[in-house]
Image (cartoon, helix red, strand yellow):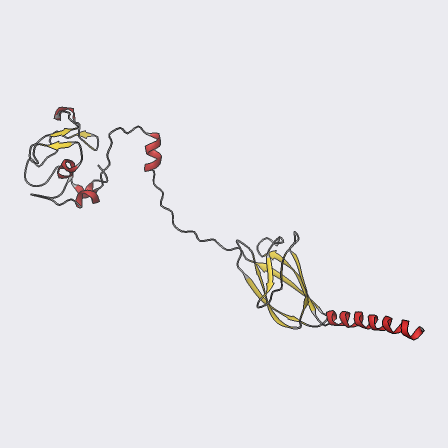
Length: 211
């Protein structure tokens, strides 16, 4: 009678012993992650063993722990945004806790170039009724007849502008008269901005930034 009651007890005790022995055969790796420059702990850094499913994150003190790791040699990788990923080799032995102290170096994040233009801001802040900006590249793209392409030849192709001739002519803008037009070059008034003499205009396209 006693034999039947004791036998299951020993079987259960043996099972627990085997389970504990199986856990003891694996190892553990623990450590801390620090900022190399300041020595401050790095919180919430990613820590994992390469080629395994074992991983964790550091706590507020930069501490981490990975347990129940089969014995062997592993690559322990630590990464965090703004820092260079660090990899170190750890050897896991049965029933042994391996401690690692890891330092991460800050790295610069390279961003793509951004083109900044003030044209959109200027259009919101400045009142520019009937204002048109023409660049030298746009003027050079216009086929030139009887001379070098310049602003005088470019204006007649714009809507609302009529020219009576390239040499000594007049400009009529949106039904206005030529005397209502004022043409300035570096703040000075230009009275005859056409090809009055020769094939070259008084406006040198290569030397003007914008019209």
